[in-house]
Image 1: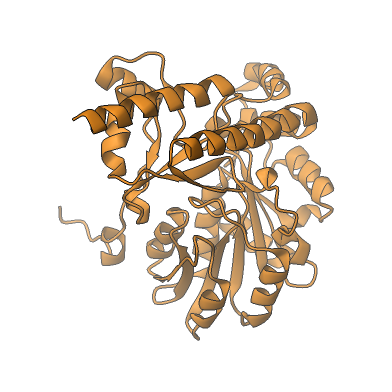
Image 2: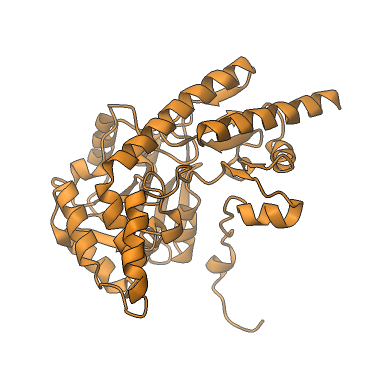
Length: 367
């Protein structure tokens, strides 16, 4: 191909999502699949969101509200910020991309904890920036090492809280101390995709610091706790001048009409959110206990997922689990070759996972 593609684009490793249910049906002929790989909400979408979708279907020939006035206003009210401090995206991934376009130039540096969400590296490399990977410490973001990695070329720092894939959090005091060390020309993006699930009361949202520190950008999503992953709605809360810059590069109509309607309705479904969080916490505690009985190490998490050290190659267990109709996520791509990440499912899905895991591990022992 004679097209001129920048080398920094060629070097990007594509993001690999969790295996879709449809792919398992095609490849293995399994139709009763349990997917516990992508940190989705096993309870489905909010009933109020589904009802709201029905009301907008007849108007799909019209462009959506631009910018999304009602959803923006509701989020601003919820978090007690101004409307012009909220930016909506096609998932929080699009907000990451917008931030990269606004803040990064070739040769800039981006500090990224490792392992963490793989899209951070893609955002940096897409702008020709240099990812500076800072290893975790005891599976938690090493904020001291991240602060020490700042150079005059640093423009952006990603703080995933809770961190994906480890599920660990940094405390409010630790985050405040970290922000105090970061130069004023460096933006700090606090990615809170799983914040609704946090049980650690020392954890604080990045929004806590925005009034005093305009460098802090907080990202959230409707894909996880609100069960709207298929509609792709994310949002960022940030200083108004930076929000204005993001709106300049944001594609028009980037949040479609059904997504806007469903997200507004989901914000009102407090009962659904409470049931989702309760299911997650009960499932985590149940699975921790069950895996401990089996002699497997389960790492405590503040998200709706957690890591399990299998003591053997995770890819082999992953492939064997597929034949039992259970999809998990192997973590070799994150640097944990013997570990899988498991999303908490419904009680019957969690039980199905354990049955499949027992069969797979017993089969390996027998062989």
